[in-house]
Length: 288
Image 1 (tube, rainbow, N blue to C red):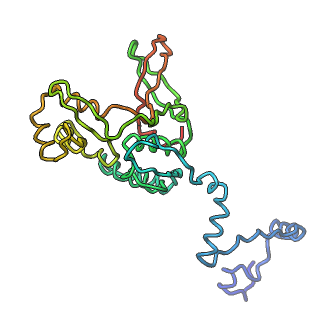
Image 2 (cartoon, rainbow, N blue to C red):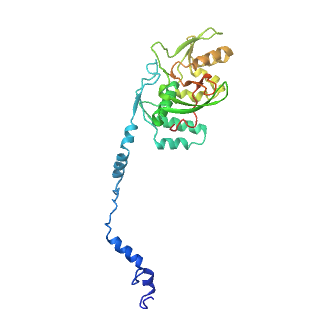
């Protein structure tokens, strides 16, 4: 029975109330157990201390994300800036920005921004289109590893094949001393020589569709039979035969150098061999 002198507050607090026998026994047992205090985590008191702590935690990551020198495919090509390019892998914040893009055009802009942020010694405006493609694949290799898993349908039996491509093993054609830039081609119908320059990464948006391609060919042509006036070049191209324009276009986009992004495989079902262009899927920027 409760002590009549015990107040309601005392009862609520459990004061002056005898403990049950089980609780008393547990308390006696606990008195004999040595207490162990948890080691207190260091308190971060300033921005400098926070940075020092994070740097210590990321010490090994920093080593793996160091800047790495690369030789671009265009190295040594005439009239192309001699760049000493270094690349670093994507960081989490870089990937987050890329995955936050909601449209193809936005993704393209974000990707170019990230590629520039992962480059030292130059920017995408300074490199050829072949160099940009090379940088893209190299950044993927540095950021997520050498292996890239893709699926490919067999052209013979339509079976799907799971392929593991080692990006570091892809062949890369590089500029040689005998490559001219601009280079001269002779049109089959007009029978005049045309000097065309190497495509730069900054030219890529100029050729988004076939119509843009035809309208902007003059931007890649340096001269026609020695005439380098832009009005002459534009007027000439507008009057050219379809055959000459096709010939010119094929030469402009001819793959003289750069990463060879084609792979050969044998079908697991029917053993048919074929060559495919390595696709860039939604898994390109993820670890395989």
